Length: 543
Image (tube, rainbow, N blue to C red; front, side, top):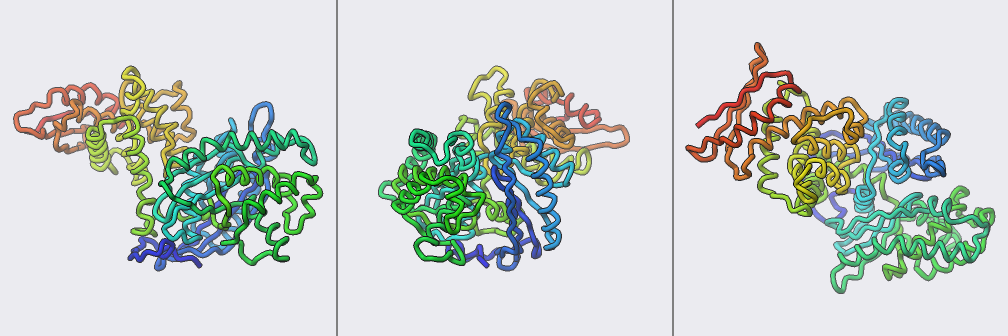
């Protein structure tokens, strides 16, 4: 059992807010579906792995003409998820968390697939971005390996994407995701068996070109004289470690955690694998049968990454995305307090990073966010029933509502939607990012309408209602700082249910300031709020 308190060699006094829980985490990948079931111990803020499950589904084997997930693979995946849930129940799981990555992320019918999963199994799946996937991989490695406050590069090779992460014990310094994976490359670039020389060279050049941008970002964030160590995770690298150990030691170690092999050894194995057919690769001692077809492409990704990064040795870590999903859940639910504090504030830091990137007036954003939260809190259980998670989404939208000015003042609310939607906010899943972007989109001008493409991207009625109500609150918050000088100091809400009257009392920051522009803006924007909540709204100034 790995104690998270000691992962970085720190002593912390964590006071968890929950009791022990059993949690299952499912990773819906390009090639396989994986599940890990863990027991979270609140006193030690650690988790022990009870069970692991894996099933090859090949979601990444998409329709070549449309890019859609195939009906038969979707059915297979849904059946697998049902079995995973049943198995989780036999272990007494209190919660089942599921994330989907590259294949579902890129398929045009990916959201439709997730809707079917929820309708047929009751399982709500988080669709996460490549950078968010990288962040959770980092958390998984951090839970399973001591980094000794040294800089490390994590390489995670999946079926559809490869993540390169520069990190240390305290934080992820660079998170990158590239659309190359063992399954994707095999399907797209290998037609001969064994691979011919022309295809092999083309595969090498393609991988090198695709990795260059991520490698350059890693190198930009390295300190002068820094010599990072390399950690490798997931199926491709574990398989390479297994066949290497079988050849070198004559047996497979009981655990691969900490097992090492060199770039020289890897290059030799690539030369051996390229000369074999798929059937011959399957006979290599230790080679999983279903990995034989894609291992060459995966090995080339690792070879090119290590070569470009000038890395001589890779160390295997058996923990990755699934365990990172568990750690992220623990952070979100208060099991980890001081430990990983930097990661626990990832949402706030990510929002502020986007705000600074687009040169937002942070003072104005803070005031708008503060007013939005005050309005939210004072109307909770009176006009709406949203909770803490929705409160956080409103905060993010409020801070970022004006980022569209970076593109153009004209229709900047529409530009805000686009920049937030594609800004790679970390700590949020794709649905949450869509909600934040929509809330910000509707802070001015037209309220949400079904004909708007961005609004139609919200697949659940509950999410559309959330955007309707929270964007109405945001409109008032923006009006309260109309001059962007902090003219309003306090607000007080009063609801009179007998005649559905909603009074908003506004106190100026400076005595004698009539706040004419703020009152005018509130009067102009209150209509959407009044209609959404079914109230008659009256704004009053308190001097």
